[in-house]
Length: 234
Image (cartoon, rainbow, N blue to C red; front, side, top):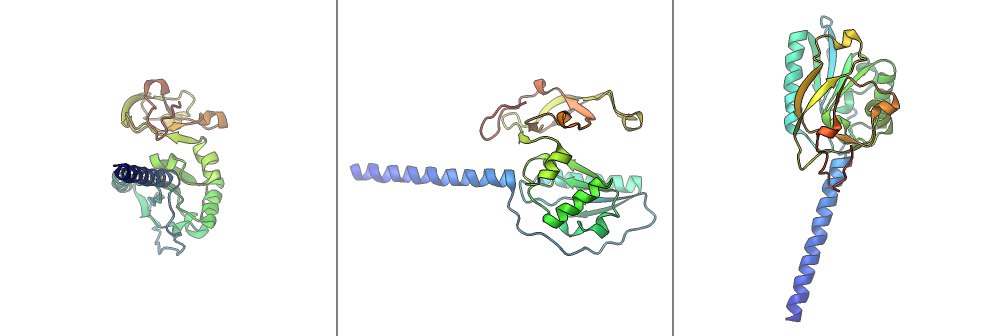
């Protein structure tokens, strides 16, 4: 009987250790990603001369991959490109982040890009691009803390990502247009609108760092509970 209890206890303990290891692996994967490789070969791109805007849609991930959202983003931007006469270049290869080619794009879109997706040199190219007037639009996953890129977090996000709700993952709430937005930017934008999303929770408000907010939500009207460590932050 004692031998059976001993074997059973070791089996339970071993199972616990394995589960802890798997859980830790998954948490690390979500927060930091596991870069497999950095693409360095310049792609062959023919930039048309008869388009209004050149748009780079970048969807590479090495962290958590929002497959459905990424695919929806590709479809949506493809429709907008046709409607508004853009040249849309869609890729998951970091090789396009070189000075020669990146300078030809009017805007770069991180389509739910998570984890570290660029090497040091490519990151510097993007930093220079933005600091010299280039535009970068980040969608959802692009705002988490998996990128391991201090400049990106401080200058593009403006706050440290904490978590997103898990218990009530998708919640509907109202968004309010800020009053100090320039008339040219707020043209055709509604003052309020209702949207259901997986709202991200941050440790601080980017306003503190001087960031301009276009729309805000009332954080008191969503339930932020449910990250891996059950931290409640607003």
